[in-house]
Structure formats: structure tokens, C-alpha cells
Length: 197
Image (cartoon, rainbow, N blue to C red):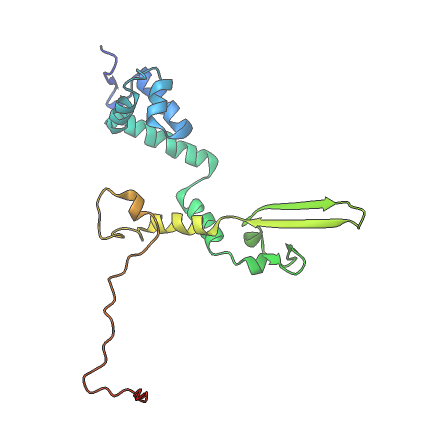
């Protein structure tokens, strides 16, 4: 048996030992190249090998099983992630922050409070008196909206359908067709007085 061969256990195919190490390492950071290196494959060909391993049926199935098991174990599922993104994307800062006092509103809901990324409170003491500086930082709404838009496929076809140009497709800029200048109808009379000077 060679190093890349798949081992048969009954009717279910399993990755060999080195492929299983790749699966385990891939789950760490979802980086196929680094996972291949950490699993013991050649660093010179790690990118190519990682790509090939991801497309092997047995390896892909092992990754899917491991990710499903991790999702069950942690309770992190796609619906929960999307709900959290939506919470951040559609949170109204005025429902969370009292802008006059720069404090969290006492009537802010738990959902709204979950959109707070951080709170800074800095007290500065000087001869002229103490001064308190407050900062309430909210989670990034634009990033959450962008991630939701990508998930929903709202950027597909943006940029005139330029295939393979992901950067232009993911800018969030919607390109509209050019607008033709308005020309008044032939029988249109201007209300302005003609300049007779």
C-alpha cells in the first residue's frame, strides 16, 4: 500500500493516517496549505497537495463529518450565526446608547446589548478638575451587512458579470446603467424670460 491510498474498512472508505492528520489540521484554521504542511506533506507542494486532498471524496467526507460533529458539540450552527449577524446588522444604536450621557440605555434589550463590542471609561485627573471620557463601541454593522449580503447572493452579477474578478464583485458597489440626459419635448416652452440685453 502506498502513502496516498485509501484504506477500506468494511464498505465505508476512510482516509489513511496521513490524510486523517490533514483533516484534523484543516479543522484548526481551514487553511489547506498549512494543514498539509502540519500533516507532514512536502512544504514545496503543500498548496497543490492541500487542494487535491480537499477534493478527495474520502477526505472531503471526513472533513464534513468532523465539522458536523463540532457543530453538534458546540451548538454553533449556520442559523445561529446568521441570527447573530442579523442582530448586529439591524441594531439601532439609538436603542442601545443614551447619547446625551454616553451610557448604555437602561431599557436596552439583551439583543441590543449583544451588539456592543466594547466600553471604555477613562478618568483623567488634572489641576482643573477630573474629567471622564466614555466610549461605547458597537459591532461593525457594515461588515455584518456585507456578510449577510454575500450569504444571500446579493452581489452576484455586480460589476457587469465579470467572472473571476471577486474583488470587484465584493466591493458592495452596485453599478447602475448610465442615465440619459433629460431633453425637453419639442413643444416645451421655458418659463424663463429670454435674455435681451
